[in-house]
Image 1 (cartoon, one colour):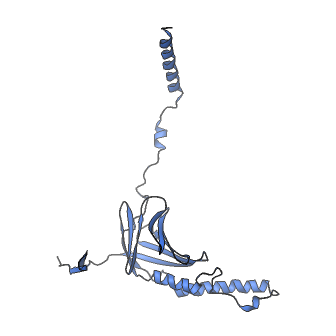
Image 2 (cartoon, one colour):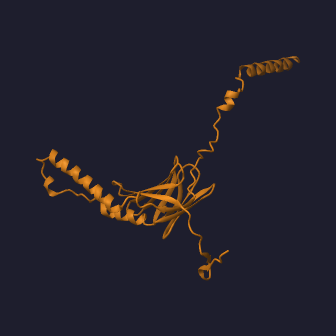
Image 3 (cartoon, helix red, strand yellow):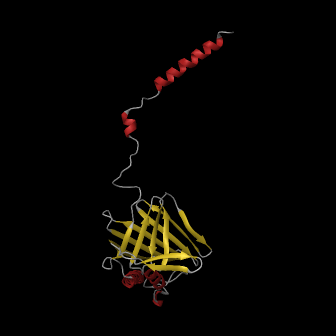
Length: 241
């Protein structure tokens, strides 16, 4: 009775040694299979810089509107030729209307033109967030982490953002089921920035407007402005060096 615990401990030691023999050895191949950080292609592209619109490579809202109306007209003409005997097709197509009760195509096109009215943008980026400053409009701010981020929410609308691989995406949902999507893409040489703006209403087909920007050196700010509680925004001219 006294020797039984010693025998039990002996069996436990023997089983432990056998388990160590059965485990696969840690080889150099196992270590090399671990993911490595690629410094040539970072997790997030760096959008930092001053950007100026390239009008030669950007869509014009009225040209894009004419193109979409022409496409709808051609589709309607094909439908009429295939259904020549159907009743009601001689009433004319709703070329610029919405089939779901939302804003018509012209309204969406004008809104997209207004959204992309800025000729310059300034983007600041840190390890934690991207901040896109647009003159006369609210800044677009998003984090660097994965997943959908809610950057703004109120009774007036919501704004979410996130990353689709190397693309930065913002979605702004406004009352009356109006949805605005921004999609930013940086070129491989980091000298060009592409922005795709999509505007849709009530889940209908979106109006898309593509804008191209090139990097430029912004002039130094001549004024230093601070926000105060008593006098509001106060600016003073910066003395030249």
